[in-house]
Length: 252
Image (cartoon, rainbow, N blue to C red):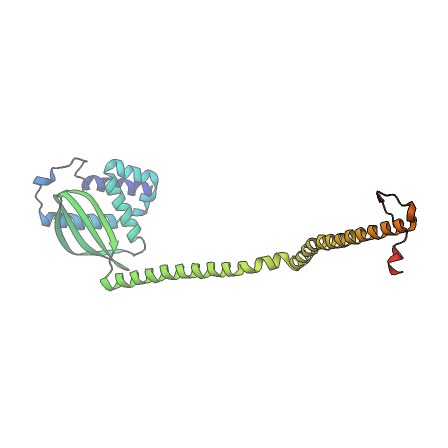
């Protein structure tokens, strides 16, 4: 029931802010009574501060605000709630200044809350019609500079930490093959060298045996021709095959 009551009160407030409707006056010919819009500004802020604005986070309540007023005003109230929800109770409005832009009047004031001040800018289309307003926590120039410096340091510090972390990871990648391969890599290299060198040795031995066989064939042929004497054929001998009976004859 409390939420329903607050929603009804807020809806009535929104209707009053929009002058009982959504009709827009021609801003090019509108003149403003500054005392009136300043008074409306303070009354509106005081009225909103007396209500529980947290209900606007409810989707149905938000849609109700939009249907009773405008999307801009509903967003303005939601922004005011998000800005002031942790600042404590509303206390008072400070001095108000009026400026003009695009045929609208803009009332700005530093509104005091229990824990901090909030700068609120309220836009009027006429003396009794508020179109939107914005709210920001008040910060002096030095406070803004300190905050900007802290944000810069945090951002740069984060970048450097990430870069150092990446460089460490890249440096550790060189140890991965050693951890994975262990001592298997040198053994593989030795086996490969043996496989490559073995055929070379065999080819050399084979060439030496072929040379020795040719010399042996010539010696044997000459010996046979000498032993035959006159019986040796005039065309010579043709040695077709030689078989070794004992391989130890070389040592004789």
